[in-house]
Length: 432
Image (cartoon, rainbow, N blue to C red):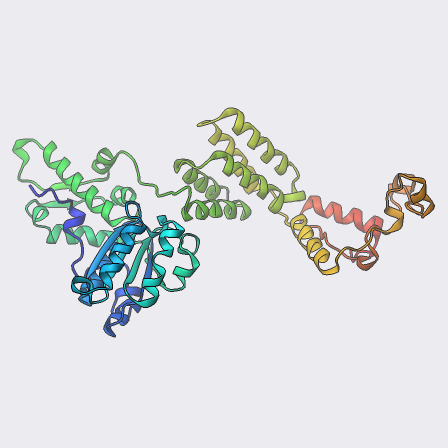
């Protein structure tokens, strides 16, 4: 029995066999065009796991008949990098501008990345780095400026289904046994879009089904069903890196779903973060910010609930804390929205930057000493509660900003009540 995993047996041997990346290696792909011109720039291949980054790097070197050397960012240090570069600059195996492939380049430290700069700049090696993380966050600017960044797209269901049928057709071990793909939904979910995981899971399911069949039924086809896959896999793959781009993408989708008043999407993205092991206090903090930034005075209870949610999660702990987070997420999604206060502070800060340190009007200044009182500090101040309706018509902004409107009430019931009150007491003074 062949012990090599199916994914390795089915690894593409030419660029034409790579699926899902036509924009790069298809007939009109940018990398294909570079190869046609006998050129290969240093590059960063950015994409999710199992979409062909390592395979593509190997095949690029093969297409141009370049020596190929690989390092892993997990196990290689600056010394290993320098040894490869030294060989690349000499004669023999590395005399034809070697391709240096570095897997998980985002795990390299700044010093390790710095050690590549000279060789990449001079063309001593052609660097091909692979990363699942956004290179603009994880790769130093000096190295990034010397490389092209190519984004590998996630594989579609059609791409993955095609890989299954190709494996059944081309792999000698699978061909030896009739296989019926009765259902594939569970396989797709279990793969998480990762071709490597898909093929190896598929092979495991075939072997499990074969071993479980009675001896009298050895001749019939192996039937792949969702129930079989779920029995074999048990858990669905959910890709989530708490320290990487997935972390930021997920919370971004979560926030935007609540801002967009979609409680179903909000709860879904919350579940993705919960299943991925996200820090519950991180989730609670983001909801606390949203309650003020995106709801504000349209529903002041939102800020109170978000604050209480954070405290409750700290007290209750996990896993029950997820229920509290869900309750708050649903409330925030369903609450009326206003960013009027958020915009007001932003505009006020811009005014501060633009106008500088305008003096506090003398009637608003504090007068704790006799000298200050003699200078008129606070002399003309009118105590609002002594005026009719608890409002006195006096200026509270510096002279250079008199009459400026920063806060513009939102179009919601509560803030329209604010607007009516402000119109009553101020009239058109502030453009209301």
